[in-house]
Image (cartoon, rainbow, N blue to C red; front, side):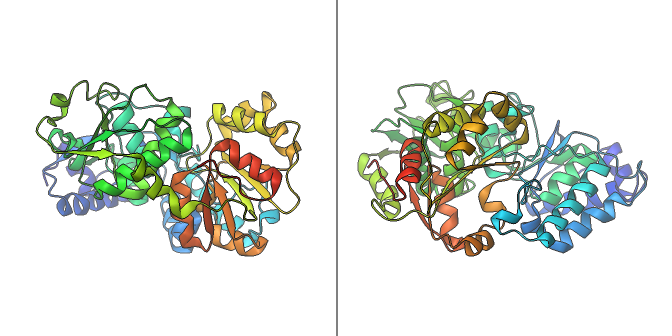
Length: 416
């Protein structure tokens, strides 16, 4: 893989051990994907929750933090994905002091290196949205698919070490979605039924992701009759990435790289129709009307300020069923505004809990489920119900409105 003068200097150790490690790591990744060279990137986003990286991962970051400042100074902004522990509220969830201390150590190491602890998977809504053609090094699958598809930026799925390496060097290997040829459509879908609420958009994304079925497939979608909101297309992309490992999609006439089918080379592609039957098939495993609900979760992706407003309006004046818990995950930056607007108070007066800077499935979901005796979990997120079956839950899916109605009733109210 070809290096320029700057990255060659890093590789030979002329700019410190941290950057030397970073370039060597990037060269190994680049060779794996046949990258010819590196591309400059403007920002990086790192997934590194303590449940995933464990003691060894925390020590890895602490070793960097112990290096001289000049050796491990970041070249571009590096922000973080949701944390695993809300340090202001963890014991009541059944999280242990050991979990919290691992989180504290990781945060200290990151902050000493200049990492910005945004702790969010919706940085494109809250922090610094990339722009059309912007090369970035992002990690979270929902972040990558939104940034590629909706913003028109360019990123592959970057693992935590790769995002750190990009922040140290200011580059990433030029392969995959950094290349024009990999951004063309490879499969074509026509939607026959229009999505309405957030959950509908998520289910549509899941159906397309499952049918596409590969990181290297790029779906183009026809038949969408209105421009989705930021939150609607957020849920669509997060579910598509969850079900299909999809990092990029196009919607004709809506997303920035696809004014027409010709823009993404899709005119000759065979059309697969998405019908109501496809939607019903996707949803059918998650129907459990009338069953007791243990916990209602709003997360994955974290909630925007607009979603916080909607949840609070549904909770206002109502009371949570005594046998049911309700958790809402939002970035700390949104939490501040939601608190000022009274949304947090309305949710917590209802009996729910708003967690800052975490996402449910990244915060020891299995352990807190066992600690609280939670089995049947309800959410409006198609992404999270896809994930949590593997954590010992029986997940169910409903609209935001029916999730809150179920939390009030103590049993699942479905709307399909």
